[in-house]
Length: 127
Image (tube, rainbow, N blue to C red; front, side, top):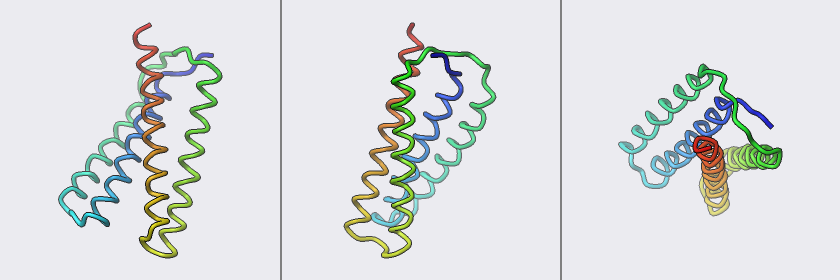
């Protein structure tokens, strides 16, 4: 199956930016470090700008298996659902053990999404 390379680049940058956003949350609320919070927020905004610019790349296509596309879709769904649960839990109780578990799941989901998309990009780069 053929897919545009710019879409995989976009997904990779978005996964990385949301990973940085969650780590940034740890810096702000758990470690109480405002300097690292603002540095992380700046990196997050720069990555969002790069992700929007990546959509303007030329329309080069890469080969990807149907199985890889399905796995990528499930990783995205997993991340979105766990992030919604994190937002709902954060609104209700503040920070407790359930919050740490959900935060870890969200970080894990975005990390897996970033690594998986990066592997797809690198695999097709060296063909």
